[in-house]
Image (cartoon, rainbow, N blue to C red; front, side, top):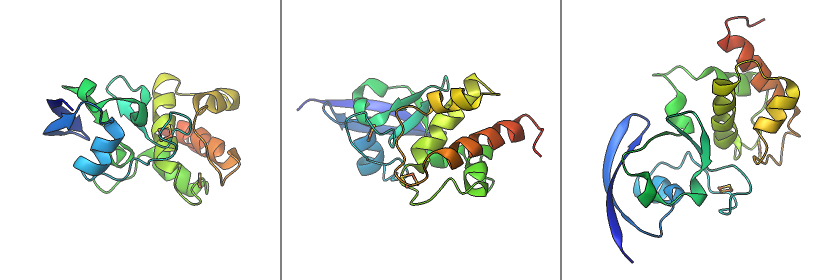
Length: 161
Ligand code: FES
Ligand code: FES
């Protein structure tokens, strides 16, 4: 198996690492960089648990992305959204609206929601549901997640309440 030397910036920190050509970004995050906040759900691009943000605020499935293709890229995982000890408004809204139950889908849902709000700061309920398509939650029935994203949208616009 060939190896590649890459520099990957995760949550603002550069990592110079050697990755095997068959390793996914998800495997490298969890196993090589010891960052388990990005979850391994299906491994086949169907659940969204492994979503990470790229610099352009698009969200990708890290289980479908080969790490070797990420040389020089900057990514943000769910834990990188916090600023110091302050949660990102989307993270806070998920807590405030009970959108976290078992929590397994939450990092991916939060990442996808941040991506959605970066592109569409005031989404309709329908647009939120479409934006989160491909992310599966087995616990909440999605209503609380949609409510949380709507609340985060208002909070980020400075019109909470
Ligand atoms: S683990 Fe990547 S989409 Fe399910
Ligand atoms: S909170 Fe359990 S899968 Fe979403």
